[in-house]
Length: 71
Image 1 (cartoon, rainbow, N blue to C red):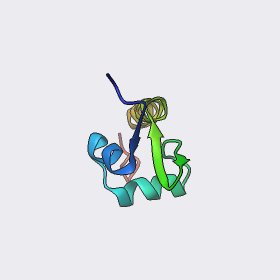
Image 2 (image 1 turned 180 degrees about the horizontal axis):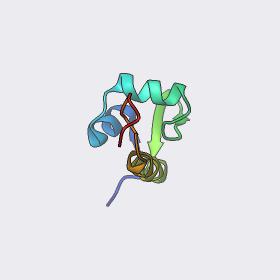
Image 3 (image 1 turned 60 degrees about the vertical axis):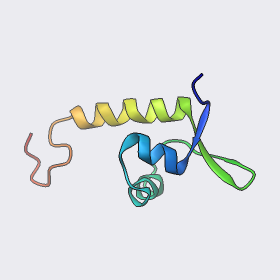
């Protein structure tokens, strides 16, 4: 059975990103939607899937991740 939400740590592990990178993405409005449940911050499975889809689309754009703008 798939989990409906995961912690920040598990999300970062599953997506091979650091917590610092995730927090920078969230600050820029480019991260997944998070939800607070009591004291915990969780990311729903739907939000994680949508974020991965958007990241895949963004990385497919020419020049993504390159400072010189080359493809």
